[in-house]
Length: 293
Length: 238
Image (cartoon, rainbow over all chains, first blue to last red; front, top):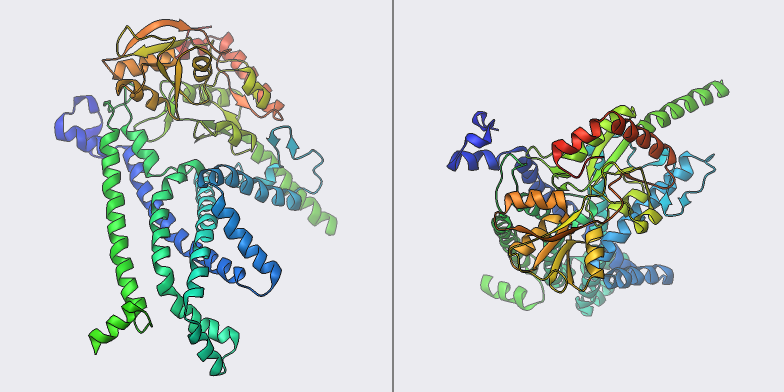
C-alpha cells in the first residue's frame, strides 16, 4: 500500500508493522469483517420472516400446514448445527443443480449420480464454471444466508409461537367483541403485542447468531476467524513478512470486535425493549405509565 | 423460421457448453507451504500454483484457483464445486475408491517427525497430525496417541505449545516449519508413506485426467518438473 513497502526485508519497527498490516492479505482479511456484518444484516430479518411464517404455520387450523410448521421447528432445532452446515448446503446446492439440469438438458442420457460423483451438464452448473470467481463467492454467501436463515428461523418460530400465546386472551376476546374478524384481531391486536414477549428470546437468538458466524468457513466463505488463524499462523521465510505464531494477538482482536458488537446489540435491544413496552399490560409497561403520570 | 430459431438457439447452447468446458477449477487448501499457501498479496502461491498453471498451459485449459478446507476437499470435488484437487494429496487406496488420481507429479515425500527435544518416544507418546492425512492414518496404527488438527499449522503449534510430543508431516513441510521455529528439531527416522502426490479428479472425468496425465508426462520428460521440484524443495526428484 505504501510506496516504501516494496522490499520488506529492509524495513524495521513501525514501518515494518505498517507495511505488514496493509499487505494484500490483510486488506482481504479486513473486508471479511464487512462480510460478517453483511451476513448478520441480511440473515436476521430473513430468519425473523422464516420464524414468523413457521409460527403462523404451527398454529394454523389447517392440519397439513400445522404439521409442516411443527415438523420444521422440531427437525431443524433437533439437528446439530455443524451437521446441518456440512450436509445440508451440499444437498441444497445439488438440489438446485438437479432442477436446472432437468430444465436445461432434457436430452442428457448419462446418469447424474455416477458412483460417488454428482455430474450435471455444464449448462446446469450453479454458478456456471465460466463465471468469474466473485460470482462463485456471492453464490456461496447466499447459500450461507439461506442456511443460517433456515436454522435460526426454526428457533425464531418457536420463540414467536410462544410469544403469540403469551398475549392475554382477554385482548383477543375484546377484539372479537368489537366485531373484528380473526385476521383483523391477529394483525391489529396479537402481532403488535407479542413482540415484547418475544424480545428476550429473540435477543438471545441474535447473540447466538453473532457467535455462529465462524461456521461460514464450513460453507467456503472466508470469515474473520478463518483469517485470524491464517494470518496469525507461523510464517516462515517463504513469506515476505515472516513471523512466529501470532494467533493469540489476532484472536484478541477478534475478542474486542465481538465484545463491541455485543455491547452495541445490548444497547439497541434495551431501547427496543423500552419502546415495545409502551402501553403494554406488563410490569414494564405499567411502570412506564406510572412514571409518566 | 422455427427451425432457424431452434438451430440458432442450439448453436448458442453448444458454444456455451464448449466454452464452459474450457474453464477448469483447481481446488487447493492454501495452508501447506511450500506446496500451496496464500501469499502476502492474498493469492494462492507455492509449488502447486506454479505446477498447476504450467500444466494448464500445456493442456491448453483455462484454469482458475479456489481454496477449500482440507476436511471437505473430496466431498466438494465429487459434488462438482471444482474439477481438480491440487493440494499435496498423496495417492492412497482409500482415496482412490472415491476419486481418481492422475499419475504422481512428485515421488512419495518421506514423512518426518519433529519435536522440541530429541528424547521423545515416538512409539508411545502423543503425536500430532492433520486430520484425514496419510500421516494421521500411520500414527493411528502405531502405538502412539494421535491428536488430529484441522490445519497443518495447528499441528506445529501443538508441539511448540507442549500439547503434543511430536508432529508427523511431509518432510518438505516440516523443513519449512523448522525454518520458522528455531526450537523445533527433526527426531527419529523418516517413514515412507503414500504412493506419491497426484492431482485428484472425479472418476467420471476421464478426459480431464488424460489431458493432465499427458501434460505431467511431458514435464517429466523435458525436466521442467524436476526443476520446479528443486526450486520449491518439495520432495526428491524423479
